[in-house]
Length: 321
Image (cartoon, rainbow, N blue to C red; front, side, top):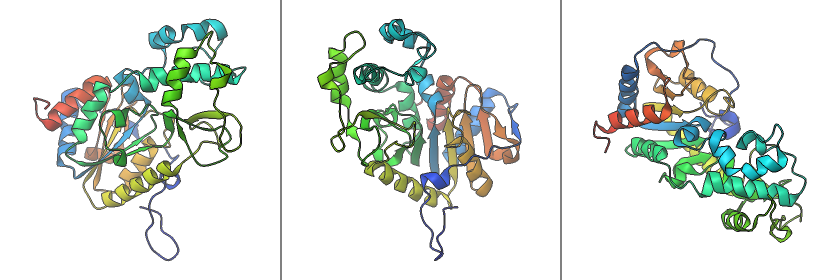
């Protein structure tokens, strides 16, 4: 339930109150055949009034935005050769490299923004998720920072990206609650970068305190939650309030056990508290569901590109239109 204040009036669920660190104790891999899982998941979605989508890194990886492998070595060869070491094994780890200068830091992050936010454009798998949701009252809660839900046509009023955006920058110390569009800057840096470095005149500085800037990605206590972030949080709370009395499906896409307290565990908490909710969990390796949920939950343990396409086609009819 949403939090309540002393006067007894219901308040919106906040991001902090939604989080949950309590895992289930009765996880099982369901033995139902794959086609039956798809049919059951599609049936739950078609019969629902509301659809709450929770999306993690597994969805973007299935869509093609993998952080390692050839995609990393092909795009970041110069960085791997220059810096090497344990950090330069994938894009996630490389983000924690102790770059020796601001020119070096923005050399890496401008490239990362180009590869993960600017150049990919709209990915087909995200479009399939949108088509599956478009005829339902829906909302998206995501930890992904690649902007794909908005690029694929989801209304920004129905998306809460809690962990930031590859296209935004902020004061490194969060001295003021504002983020800045970095897309144009990243494009310019990408053109000017030499030997993994950007020119000193391109290094951004905070317009308020004069200190260094940072990517708007949640990594420490200085992450900036700006006005738009709080507006999205408010809309998320409103949606959850509506769901309390409606037949709702929690559609979980690619959420593993890396940061389960943001989506996976809270979804399970919602299931325990609301009999009107059902869970459809898609994950290549971690589609376990609590056994206590019985017929209200289905865990589809299959390649997500395939399972999302199959689910979308059955939700909308066999022609997939």
